[in-house]
Length: 392
Image (tube, rainbow, N blue to C red):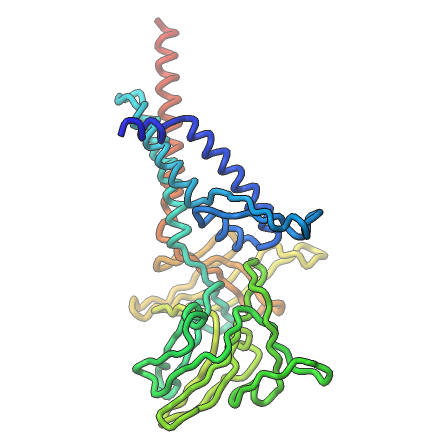
């Protein structure tokens, strides 16, 4: 046991881990150019071990692209740094009020590392688009998608059956007790280009019997998946429905259809259903109304100087109808969510909020406070002792 503590508390281990952290950041930054920020974050910083491959775009890339360099991931380096710091603290720490600042500094650093891990695991980011004069009570994920069957028969509420696309990629048949039919996945495209079939196109049109693609010849071309922040995967699928009486038809669904095509609806056994593939939605027990959006530009340019949204929160459960403003660097924190002013439409008639759920958002502030208090306390103690000696 003493030997293990000696190894994990070694200053050599500290230096080695810090050096590996620099290596991780270096290769993660190199690959970020090709796989995007999100891809680099997942591959390098949210893994135990990553492999950096020699890029094809580099000189001799066609000959050296097979070279794969192992790089320790963030989930390996971070926990080892915490273990190293804790072991070193208890190995070399001598109890006493003179070391109180050291305790606070170490506690703050450990808390900061733990908070980063919590953020990676627990933080959720979504978008909420609202047009002026309208309300919204849901937010859409940036990365996750869902296949939904919506029973729109009810006059007041819709019944929504949601299937995550992660399941669609692994399973081709779905049944739900609330649906009188089964869903079969005939084709699934993690990323695709969806276009109308031209007269000289050599590709065959997608074969479906219902919906938008049955009325227009549509070509679906598979594309490589992307993890760039400024790009989204255009997910598509061909689905078939089967009821007790047999085949109900097939549809082409995609998350790019949201605002560009009419709803794909059908009727069965006295109910009206809508079927769609869309970005995953999370519904809220309250709604936000966009009263007014303002967009200031620097004189003589189209560069945004400031953009802000006047919103009103409608929360029936709390009988709350209050007005507030969301603008750059001044988010709204409400019911565990943080609403940031993120974007807007070209006509300045709609605003987009980045909605973040991060249960540990306060921890970095606490850790920085602990480190600051520890530094002030430690330097203050040494300054007091130094001044006392000078007086003697």
